[in-house]
Structure formats: structure tokens, C-alpha cells
Length: 314
Image (tube, rainbow, N blue to C red; front, side, top):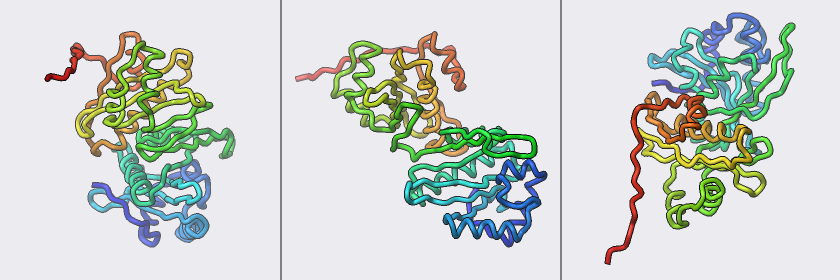
């Protein structure tokens, strides 16, 4: 079981410095905030300066045997309640085994659970594709990209700002749209349903469904609801994606992709670590290629359905 503990530079530095093999790797990791090659004196000075100016705390990740396998710094920006991750790195010898994702999930858990951050943000160079994929696998999403943010020799690197939000709350921008979490009302649900599928369910039914939905994502153009999706399930073995709707005039703008990514990120954040969770949805044949892009696979099972009528018996 992986654990986190505060970094002790006097003992951990000798392990961490061996993970940086060349100047380019060093620059991708820290944007040359530390000297190359790493020295114990400079490592300690930079960490002390970050602690004084920003309140940064350095952490290491420990493997099952207590070996140091990862490192990062974390701070909380009180004025925005935003957690900031910096200098994320794992032992190259341990890569390919999910070590980076495990460490990041623990870091995010710490940020949300201990420091009570609303969001956690990090920055990563566009040329560091492996790191970008790792962050996306944990649930971080690109918010913006700064082009030509860093020059390394004859290369010009862009830099992504990536963010993950506290599950179950908040709003964020998506281009000119607003994404909201878990505040989709019964009225909004019915309005969007009827704009695409015709007559909607009864308000009493819908209100009860909203109350017992695990996770709701909705997208607004101003005050107009234009898209939604929701997750139901048992939190352990099974999740089911329901009611993925994007108004026709708002399709082909990446909104559907956003909805599915948010729902899958919810599962990754909340599922039991190191387990496989059955995730299912129902799609019309023409929509299957869209869902296949996210890893969904159509199987031979046929969907059986029955609309059960409820009535009051005297």
C-alpha cells in the first residue's frame, strides 16, 4: 500500500537526484527552478524559499517496502481555496506500474480531505506527453494552454494548466459555457429532456431521481441548459451512465466529450483503488462510435426493458 510522508531532504535527496538523468528531463520536470545537476544545497534552498513565500510542503511517496518512489510539493492558495501541485516526479524504474497515478490520487485526497481545497491545479509542459496522460488518468483536465511558455535550447514548449475539482460541487467555465456539478434541478432536467426527446417524466419522479443520482453534470449557455448527463450506481461494483443529452444545435462542440470525461473521472476518484468497476450505458447504433472513443465496447447482450406502471391500491 502506497503512503505519503513529509519529505526529509537530508535523507531523501540522495534518492531523488538519481531520477534526473539529463538536462532535458530536468527542465521538463522543474522548468530549471532547481539547478542542474541537482545539488543538496540548492534543493534545500529552493524548497525553503517556496515554503516561506507560498507555504509549499514537500512530500514523498513510499512503496510497500518503505522505499521512496515519488516526490511532489503542495501548497494551498487561501484567497481562491486552490491547491497547487509542483515538481511531480516518480522513480523512472517504477514507471509503467501506475505509481504516478497512485501518488497523485493520494495527493488529491490530501488536498480535498485535509487542506479542504475546492480545486487542485498543476502545470505541465506540452512536450511531456507521458505526464499529461498520467494526469488525465487521475481526472485532471486541461483548462488552458500557454504557447511558447518555456524555451529549452532550440525547442519552444507550451504549458498546460490542468485542474481537478472537488467531487460533487462547484462550477467551471468551458469556453463560453458554464459547467455545473450536482445542481441540476428537476425542472431543468425536464426542460432539456423535452427539447430533445419529447414529453418528459413527471416532476415528482424527476425530483426523486435527482436526489438519488450519484453525480450530475450540466452545461449552460448563459441561463439556458444545453446539455446534461448523470451517473447512477452502487459505489462499489457497478456504475450506469444515464440521460446523456446535448441539444442538437450545440452538438459537435466537444460538449458530449466533456460530459463523458467528467463521469468517468468521477468513477476514478471515488472507486476503490486498484479495482475494476463495471461501467455501462445504453446507446443508439449511430452513437456507438462516439462511446467507443472512450473505451466502451458493445457486447452480445440484448437490452430488455419494461415500463412498470405504478398505481395506488385501495
